[in-house]
Image 1: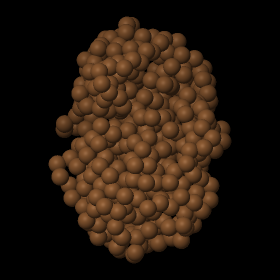
Image 2 (image 1 turned 180 degrees about the vertical axis):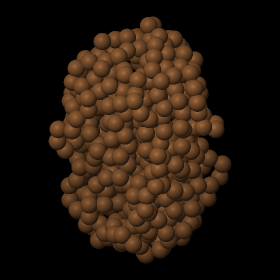
Image 3 (image 1 turned 120 degrees about the vertical axis):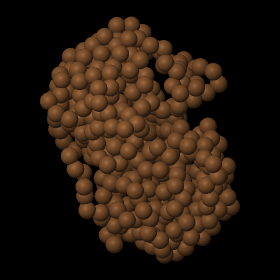
Length: 446
């Protein structure tokens, strides 16, 4: 199962002001979950605005192998006829998740709670990512890891439990993926499962469980935490999911408009779930001109249109407790910080070391390559901003967010900025290059 590809280097060129209205693709986290809920619900679930990137399509294929009928009925419009909780089929093939960390970990929770055995695999980048912390609670619930690569990595074979043990589990790290895997496993448990997190992480799974009719209770716990109680074996009811625009994807045109002089753009229908808005909060502190208009609810989530105009940014100190709500946006925040006046210190980024790549090291190397003065101290990234020279080529390490972040840097730096490979952008934001071009940005093959 090789996922080899030919690298496609790209270069971002200095832009005049960006102008126009755009809608970025659907949210990746919600797209993965919408398909999985379709699988676990008897009847037909309709999805609108699904992100049709490689990662999400891999989750759709896994749902098919587990017994769902998954069909595309139009752009972003999908229908899933599910088997329902407790009725998954043993898959007749490997569940190959490509680059999708979220899809693979959530699906481990689903399989762990059913009496079936499945083999999980992915591309070279996913095979490097740790799965141990997701597997640990699932084993407590009765699942068994039959085979695994070294250190609990993919490829691995997981035998689920037909009667998963209800547990009370405190997550050792702030991770929405670990929490969600436990909740998915708990759906087929003959009792009540409790998950406690010390730091609240993104809550899409909880919101969607409620949207589909599960018996779930979420309460505050301690200073920043949550206690989630889920009753097993609910009868989920099909419910339409309208996937809001992905704030992690909106981050790229958003930061581009802030740093390219003369820009004035509108990004439509962006999810503004408070557990996902760390980037916007930070940019506002830095002096960004961002207006929120037409706030409304779609698919159980609050969304808003963002009007963004070019801004004089200044450096700020980003507290560590904000990291969970913007873990995917640090690369592009580092780019914004490069153009800000003064120093920005982003604290507590240990989680970035286990993303698609060691994202912290890769971002730092990209900044240095383009003449930005930056240091890593412990788990902090420190960026001294000003005019950015550019002219470097950045090694993306197959990380889509690093590729897009540095292409955005090139739109405002003195010399163009190149990335060694743009192929992976298709995993989360397949329309990135044409969408940026529609605003007036020049991102071209090198």
